[in-house]
Image 1 (cartoon, rainbow, N blue to C red):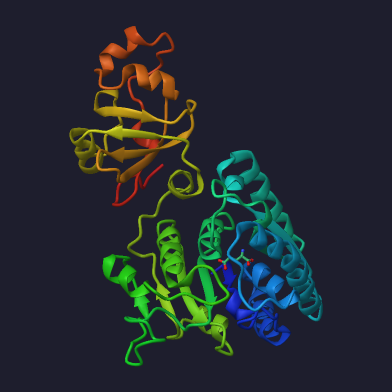
Image 2: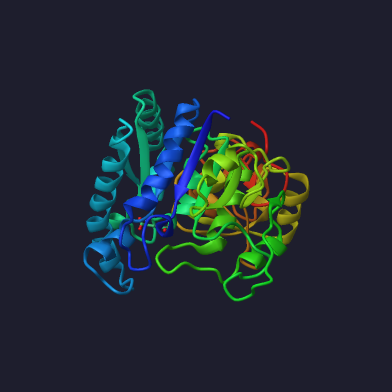
Length: 374
Ligand code: GLU
């Protein structure tokens, strides 16, 4: 274990009214400092800005309007970081605040800056504390919840493990708040419908995601060969126990995961698709079963305006996204050759460079084993 990403949920820091508890924070920070002392690189994704904003303003309920949440995030983030600074200072540890949105990952240059900055923060021995830039987040560019944000960040810091702290000590086979016989699931190797069903309906009062976003996060990291654990922040030594392999919370092993390359993982999860190519059933079959390149003949519709080199969704006629890939041609060019044989492309397109619309190496299926190499 060389690098661990820890996501701290709002409920692990604040009470139901968003009042930040320094005691709760201290309890986690002690363990984080100990993990660092063991020579493991630690990166934090911390929620709590909107929650802490509620606490600062003594609001009784989380507001529903976007602009109110954006204001609370701005108010609460300062309060949150001040608290982290105060607590980490006791251990002579510096904090570094990073606020990101999804488009920061989409843009390769910004992603590279982020990666390099994180590396230097670690070299300085400081703790990076990442949160979504909620105040500037619009629907198009937001990640939406910090479980997903932590999962998207984990490959960037080459994490071996993502630990998600929560007010609940793992995944249960039923909702433990309503069914006292619900049993904890200690170990998960594949995320199927059964696991997703177990996660339904568990939401926290102050947090955003609930268990469903944690399962989604598990899928993202497992596809990148990274393990994940959900532990309760109420466990005294929960973070350390997970690292020591104790039976605590729920552990998601990536052993059977897809082991996507960083590039394919970026295509599938970190990029923001700029359009859609709707494909017919024959083309869908070829993509899913044979992992072929996407050819012009199978495309029935081009949706959106995009440039060569951008990522698009490949969608079947029923509307299901089956793959994502980097297009070799711009949308207006694909529009001219859709439904036509590849051989015809040369005469139709003055900009002809190759016969594939998306080469197999640039195409990643949403599910399955294909698209694993490079
Ligand atoms: N970014 C939000 C905050 O700091 C939290 C999102 C989440 O809980 O997933 O309040």
